Image: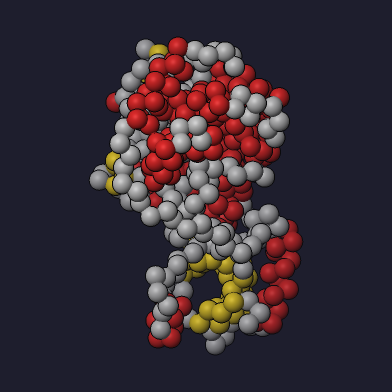
Length: 417
């Protein structure tokens, strides 16, 4: 199981272990938007699905959801059991096959994963639904061009954010640092917490270990020393080894290959033939479902996506007072300055010209104006931290953008207001 880390890999799975007392989540194995339609964690989703299955063991949707949630938690054995049971209930659905393919990829077994994805596609699944996982299988095999094609297809699916992260890493493995950083820019703009880690990997894969360590230290001060040996070794690995290291925490040693697992990953047979592994997992799932269910938790309400994409979103717990609004608006924040000049009326046209050259990056991004007595600044933001702002700036074309932090006396208003 992927959650049991060997010491040789704990390089802190670059960010999966506790570094100087700071715990940072490791790279997810499946896009976290796909395990639940609710705004909940993988653990909460898994608990909810298990409660459903305790009363309705043949609930196909709950089995698929439980498998995806278990996979997001790093428990590939449990995920395989849920997907295998779902396949027994509905063998004509592509979802269990795609799930078993994702399990194989999570275990580092790319070659066993491909037949599952082939079968899922034969059963009618579009590539957008499994491209993030099949792309990683190709990456592990050193076939970066095919991997990137699948990641791009998955950008239109529910796993879009994870596909974008994996695409950036794959581009860096291919030696395309500039496009890799540009690919990350939309995630940085909306404050994606994993972007700083992925950016550090991109720099390391491109041979810039010093830049990678600076990026890590900016995101997690004091942590660079713990991951420096790992980052410095990355450029010397083969393409497949690089993909395994940065995506799965599988890192080669002189005595062989060290997996982020205490035991070798299981090898699955070509679907749909059942295996003894599946039988054992199904038995385990049966035991789980026979256990007394945990007390029900309040079912979270579905949270609709925001209508616009912001560089940073902070939702207040209650309606702030007018005084609090003014204080918050003038608090020190990190922005990117795109242009400046004495004539604020010219900035909307400048913003549209910049946006026309970087349409994908600026999708949903609003402009702001910081007004002072002698000039006005065209801004985007605010950003969560300096690393996110720099990632966005590096992806821009034909724009000399730079980081700017407002003072508490600056007046910042939406562009055009």
